[in-house]
Image 1: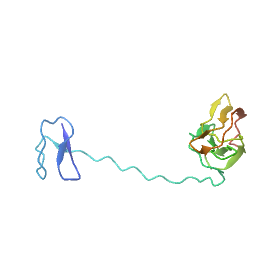
Image 2 (image 1 turned 90 degrees about the vertical axis):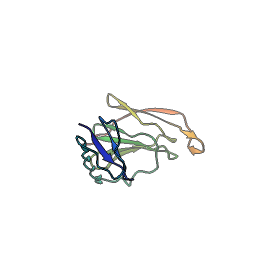
Image 3 (image 1 turned 135 degrees about the vertical axis):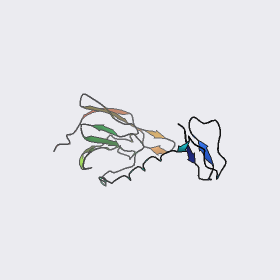
Image 4 (image 1 turned 60 degrees about the vertical axis):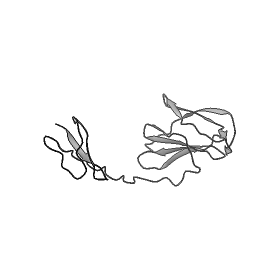
Amino acid sequence: MACYHESQQGAQTLLAGAEHLAPAGQPVAPPYHACPQPPAAPAPTLLWRALQVTAASSAPLTLVNGVLLYPSMGPKGTLHALDAASGRLLSKYDLGASSNCGPAVVDGVIYTGSGYKHGGLGYGGNTFYALTVPSAGG
């Protein structure tokens, strides 16, 4: 059985199993019926906000074992490690230059680089790092 949807302009459009459209303002003849509207998504709830992050970033975040890794575009390229449940700053490590890459983590080791400079953004460098993942449990 097909159903229809009424657009904001008032025209009815068949969504499935239809061979014709009903004119605006005219009901769609049976066996067609109005499609049920999906439930509205609940509004997000703020869980925490990290004010101790020192610079903006456009890099992807990395989550590992409850630790959120946030690289920054600041002149020191600070890599922040936050407790993903609370937002508490666990540690930070200055990479020496801007970082615009999401860290990779393999077997408990963080692999990341620094030195992003492009289009007048960031601070140049050329270093690659292997770091340990801080514990979120402390």
